[in-house]
Image 1 (tube, rainbow, N blue to C red):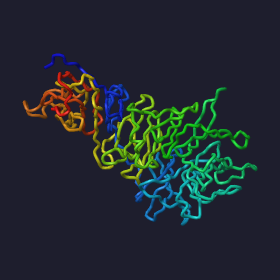
Image 2 (image 1 turned 90 degrees about the vertical axis):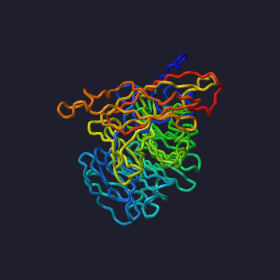
Image 3 (image 1 turned 180 degrees about the vertical axis):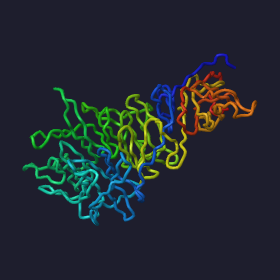
Image 4 (image 1 turned 135 degrees about the horizontal axis):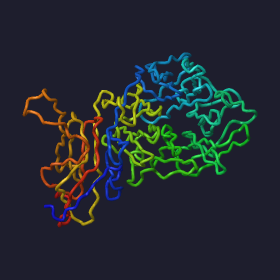
Length: 539
């Protein structure tokens, strides 16, 4: 049976949405759900730690936006009256910070919890944490802000811009640039960016300068992002990036006070419909375009879609059910992106992680976010499944990590893409297989299955580790395994019930998440059969 057979090591390098491993990279995986790279070893995977609850607002929610300054989080949450209310929470002490100044008519109306929306945006200018929210259209106000002159005693205010250029519609976005507040003001037929005085986000009496920037036509603007640019003469130039829907991207540099304010079209012929996907990374400004994740680097060059053509993940973003609900954040080397994947069955919110250093994807993870932001070495998120609560979601396993999230025990899935075609026009036969893995002494057996091109199981087995080590005097002689468990990382035999025959096949392993589990290379011994490919011959 083993004559003319060949070994095939499949080292799980990263996630791919390719339907054929022949055209993807070696080690491509169709699922690494709730698995993340082991920080010590290339192509070895460990379980994603569960998000830990840190604050329950006790409101119906959702938390629509928040911003962290120091250790204090300022945000907006939907309450029973149908309006988004300001709240604050001290992440260092895990205590609620009281927000004063809220009166009837000063808070924006909540947007629908599902479907297309214009997400609220917050940014800090001076001592004002400004909130741009389309829900102000239901009030006499246009913007809101936390006065955080005393960070632990924030005061809520709402109103309009004062000075020469007042708002006629509520701005949909705000960003700090050159110590001014820059607002997207999408008045009908006249979209523009309006900027404030320096360190005064609510006044625009800018020394006789008209504080308005226009962008050539009536296409609405969608998002703002900050980016530092390398200067050919040395040093760094700060820039504000303005997204015009998915049509174009503009770069704003300089400042009106020094007569250096300049606007340049970057002529990328792309952009974003997902304002909450715009985030700063160590590689530049990331955003989700209609064709996938892109990054504008520090030389103002835009990347191709990262993971296009089966080299990673693009399909869940291309087929996002509601692009405006996509949200993303980056901390260190990890970019986390949530999308509602219309390609999934059933349609579901999923989170994908992109490792900037390793240039690999993982997911889909079950911690899909309503909104997410970096904090310290971790992430703070409002989960889609529990959007009125704040959760801490770590990107590596720590001493206090758990594996129960929002009341449910986490599980993981390790699935290869369909294995590469041998190009010999015949079925193949797999007689032996090993999986490099490490168990927890108390973990449930892994379920291992080989599937054909229709995802129909060809054979399935259970792979178990050894029980916990025995303690002298605490067991009946002859009724327990002597010695410690051999659950460290090593190749484990996959005892198939019969030889596996298929033209296209993939292997899936699933199990319950624990801190000790590691998953590595799948070793296969296969043989090319001598008859023409027969897809009905899978057995």
